[in-house]
Image 1 (cartoon, rainbow, N blue to C red):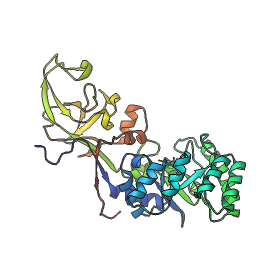
Image 2 (tube, rainbow, N blue to C red):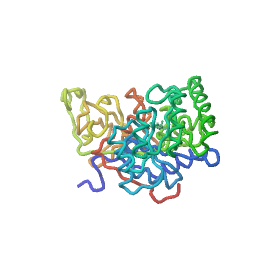
Image 3 (spheres, protein in one colour):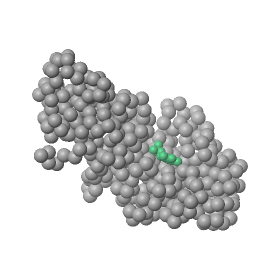
Length: 369
Ligand SMILES: *Cc1c(COP(=O)(O)O)cnc(C)c1O
């Protein structure tokens, strides 16, 4: 009946991903490498398709958080350098080696385990993030020991405030990292030094070192949750559903759980078969907006697990029409950044929350970057 519509659909523009990777790589010094970060199922976009697009656009490395994410990429046939950023248990470490993925190391104890299974290592230096990572002296010892067994691949760190306007802590972390990296590179020139995330890559050429690890920006999202277009990034994801039915609600009648919406006058309401299980946060109830035929319409009533309701102004909307939650419609657009601001969170979380029940459709696979 409603041919061509998907219940809940994330349309991912791989041409946008390629554009963003090329754009970020254009900032780097000659020979500078880009690691495309595709953890969390490619920030909700689909790890395998994004990884392929990123490699096609010149990403030399892929980065993930967990060993299962690394194994998924290898199972899909992705070759090339791949690293796992996060902590690993003993069995995960073994699986990382099986997946031919590099791992990060910050303790003597983990170094011994990693040496046993022959893992390639990136020493993680805590320059000020204050989570995992070794102090400078320990990092140096680990690098020396890893190099002695021919397993030293890199030195890495991670910024805590690269997306914030105030730069003093960012610069402090960067100086600490550059001090250690310069010292170690004299002894181990093959080692790759990498510390920049998307925000640091866009902000500070001194942070580029041998490689940058860009996540959010390759998806066309703004690291500081402001405006991706100011950095010439193109949002890759469109999130949509459709109008399953239109009802006319009479004054005094209610819609949905808890009767959160009671019509004051005769109101046309669209029933949309997508809900919080798909990643439309329940706290957008009575706050979020959608695009229908290029018109902004308000989400009304409680967002349920599988459905939500939208008030239709005038004659807007009929069964089968597309309902856009993130994306463009005529001259209107809803950015993930806008949704995040409504929710008091960041664009990262908005796209990561797009659930496994949402179909991913890829467009732009063939066009030029
Ligand atoms: C997630 C992650 C990144 C990417 O950060 P973005 O802000 O998305 O660019 C880089 N490095 C590490 C270690 C990460 O965990």
